[in-house]
Each structure stands twice: as C-alpha cells, then as structure tokens.
Image (cartoon, rainbow, N blue to C red; front, top):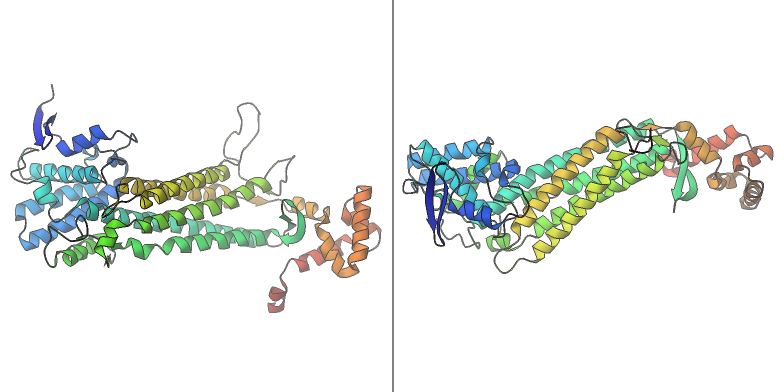
Length: 468
C-alpha cells in the first residue's frame, strides 16, 4: 500500500500520498468540485503565470527579510519548475472550482511549498520548515494573485490571436490582388444586383480582419494593468509600504513587459468589466470572420449544382454515403467555433454582472471561458487561413458567365442607352428566356467585349478612377 501522510485543517484531517506535492486544501478542492473533468495541468500558460507571481513576491520578501534565504531559494526553484511545465500530476484542482479561485491558489501554494520542502531536505507536509500560506502566500490573496495571473495569461493569448487575425488579413489582401481582374455579380438579399470585381469582395474581407486585430490589441493596455498588492479587497492587508511597487517591478522583469499598477485597487478586485469587454471583442471578431467563412461556403457551393465561383482545397471525405463528396470543413469549423465564442461571451457577461460586493464569486468561469475562447478562435482562424484562404482558387469563367447571363449588367447598360430602352431589353430577355447579354448583342446595342469593358469601368469607384 502506498505510504500516506495526514494533513489537518479546520474541517478535520485527510490522508494523502506521503510524497504528494499537493496538500489538504488541494485535495478538498478536487473532491468538492469535479465539474469540468479538467485540471489546472491542462492550462500550462496560466499555471506558469501563477508561478511567476509567486516567484516575484518571494524575491521581494527575500530582500526584505520576510522569509529566509534558503526558503526563498527553494520557493524560486519550485516556481521555476512549474514554469517549465513540471509537476503537472500535482495540479489536481478543477479550473471551475466554486470558491472564487481559492482552491486554485491553494493548489499552487501547496505544490510550491512541498517541492520547496523537498529541495530543503524535508518531506512534503513538514510545514514547520516552510508553510504554503505563511510563506508561499505571504502578502497575497486569491483576489490579487489570480487576477494578475489571468490578465498576464490573457495578454499572451490576445497578442497571439491578434497576430493570427493579422495573418489572415494579409492572406486576404493577397487574394484581393490575385482576383482583382475577375468580374462577378454583387448580390444583395441573395439576388443579382450589380457588377463588381471579386478582388473587391476580398478587400472588404481583409479590412474586416484588420479591424478585428486592431480591436483585440486595444485591450492590451488593460491586460498589462494588474492589481498585485491589493490582497483580498484592495486594502493591501498583509503587505507593507513599498511592497506593491517592488513586486510589480519584479514581475515586470519576469514578464519582460512593463506592467502598470491598477489605479483603484478596490475597483480592480470588485469589477470584471475589462474581461467582459475583451470577451465581447473576441466574440465579435469570431462572428465577423464566420460571416466571411459562410460567404465562401456559399460561393464554393456545388461543384455543379451550386454557385461554384470559387473552389476550396479538399481536406477530407465529406460523406459516409455519397462517394466523392467534399465539404468546406474549415469554413464551417470556424463558424462553429464562433458560435462557441458567443456562448462563452454570454457566460462571461453573466458572471461579470453576478459579482457581489468586494469580489466576484465567478472568477474561474470568467477566466477559463476566456482562455478557451481565445485559444479555440485562434486555432480556427489559423486553420481557415492555411486551409481555405491561401489555397483558394477563383473560377474566372464561372464568375464572368454568371454576371453576363444575369440582369446585374442592366444598370451599367442603362448608362449607355437610357432607362426605358434597357428596361425593354430586360423584359425581352425575361420573356424569351435568353440571357440579357445575348439580347444586347443581337439587338446591336454593343458587342460582348464592349459590355465587358463597361462592366470593368463601372466596378471601379469614380474617386479611384479620378486618382488614376
């Protein structure tokens, strides 16, 4: 039988494996909250930032003499190992634990303390030499530690998501240039409307993506603003004069980012509106790009019974029943993930509004919903860029044939021969069942090449033509 040790808290005693790096508070958290089936180990970036916060604080306490030299060195070793991704088996708490994040903080405190004890030559659980709360958590609270680590993890997540959206925008700009000479039907209400260039549509998509990346980066200053030193409710109880600025300077060095202190510490631990705002931007970017994805699903429909104006690169068999069928899986996948992000944003909004008095009970839901949403949207956008936009092909002949055979050319012909005569030609085409271009040519109005020239000229905005 595996050797056991006994730990005690105010609720009583529990047994756990003798060499376990977690302690009684972690174990109670694991037993109390088996909600998601996940553990903190599945969020290494967040764990690393929690460890960096603990390391920064330990460095300050070491200089101030609040903890001993050997204690500080051992804590630093344990934090460094967590940052490097070690001891994942000891990160046992479910991220959606129901205690404002207390069990998460306890899990980190105990793992750091017990690994530090091993480094000092003591057995795990020998908390007289180094205590998870009196030493590792000294001058901290779940409120300021979690909020600081969550923001810094999201700072990285948001930067990466913005960079991925920028990459997609660049790919769309390339497609804009590639498709600039291809005439197509502009459709409104899914009906033939006016002539335009396929490249113009992709230019619009690129501008949308660029704007999305900009909106995400607008949140970076708020994510660099942290409340470390606020402790539980913003009063800084348990810290000393100068601790906050020293800890922030230390953490800035570890983060390689200039962090700024929260202006109002009470506000910073009470209110989660910054996270709700970020979630809204993530959702908006995802849903906006889902519109682009859905456009490409429509335009690639077919290959014979649909629009078929663009061709997506095949990725996998599309049916267990219909041989040869290929589906636009990554375009549909991006849309699906956008819907997930919308649901996550709703959860975050409700959780942000549900905070009570001096803290928010639902911080774990806010944090992990954002971690999941930013990560999943980033992956979906990257795959959409790599598997859909970059290998996308335009079918020039199909685009131009659809345009020439439609009534979308009528507004351009009207500029040459007037409204009444154009209307008569459209009526003749409808009555005879012939394409409008055939009627125009047979009636001697102009040749097909002349029509194409008129269409190309009309697709360029007059202001742009004046610049040329």
